[in-house]
Picture 1 (tube, rainbow, N blue to C red):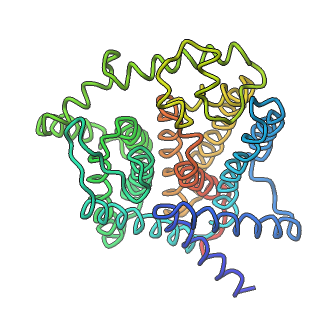
Picture 2: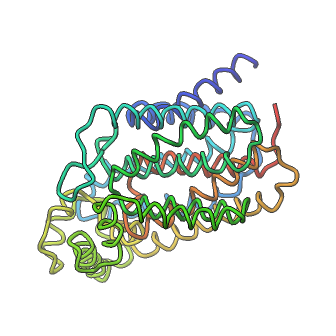
Length: 385
């Protein structure tokens, strides 16, 4: 039994590390842990975590819509994306003691810092519009940015929770390259998401840091290069090229939803469907299989009921995390840190989903769902060992 426990801990640490450096390895490790949890559940029958029904309804509906897809075979091939929801159970059922909470935190911190340092040292990138953005080991500026933002929020949660000087110094050392990498991705949704996550963490744990954060943001913008200022100013400008493209794309998404409101068009590349059933003309992003909005993308792919179920699932996860926060007096500092991290990451995932398609990004979903599941584990009063 001790050997099995150690293997679980090692696999968890490997999953945390791989989730920031290799999608292939992380998905394989997630699969191994998911199968092991399924076997263990048959033998031990653990008590329900609290999100089983909502995950089952959302994933079940999406799978049932595959026969109604405009390309059922292609959509069936994409169905493996739903396996990422097993990360919720991995976090909630395996990160059940402080030792494992430490392992997961430091594996995420080490991998994110390593990814950032390697990418900053080896890639060609610039803050200037039209030049290359930092793409990190993920090869995607957006995915890389969302991952850096998620880990930064986790690190921040523990910076305000842990009291040990050594731990806080190590967290700060990991935070520095992560934030530098996040800046050079030039990904505005991640910038907004990380600020929102930090704000919620400070509101819950250290309200006195809210003015400090505000001053830091103002000073940062005042001292930032002109390229960063221009990028920030463009966030609310509908005439800016990528913003305008989003608005046009969202209008086309609404046209597709009106065409197939219940079943959706399927989890497919949207070029041909958009050309036939909408007024959308620029097929570049459609070829890339995303609509820059999680909830619209869900409704387009699997119908309005799927989007409603996704919102309900996210609401359930937040409720479970909030319940844990209300009971934090019973928690260790490591449990409290993960509950706080889970709430902050939830804010990132839900908010960024309003302007980008995080729901179909398996790398981002893995890290975010794992963090939320671990936060929910912390709310279940599990062991300190």
